[in-house]
Image 1 (cartoon, rainbow, N blue to C red):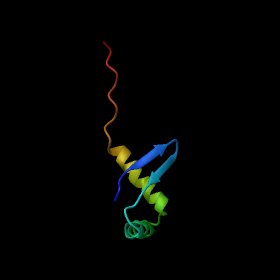
Image 2 (cartoon, one colour):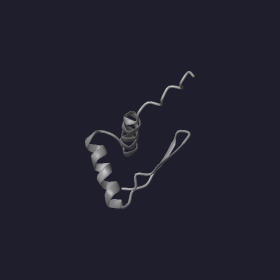
Image 3 (cartoon, rainbow, N blue to C red):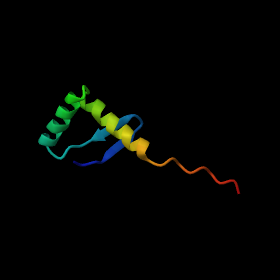
Image 4 (spheres, rainbow, N blue to C red):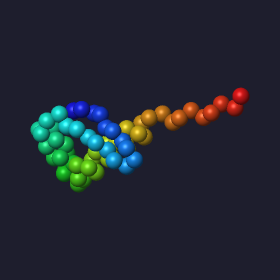
Length: 60
């Protein structure tokens, strides 16, 4: 899977390597009771949550 996501405002472009890969993600989303867009949003949110918090500015 091409894990490149481009975020512009609230728009995200997500590209699958093949129709088979897209179908697999759609099936996974359906099992979880989500749309494909909902699944992608939840995956992106999990990625953002896993990022370290920005460092606080130092008071020098």
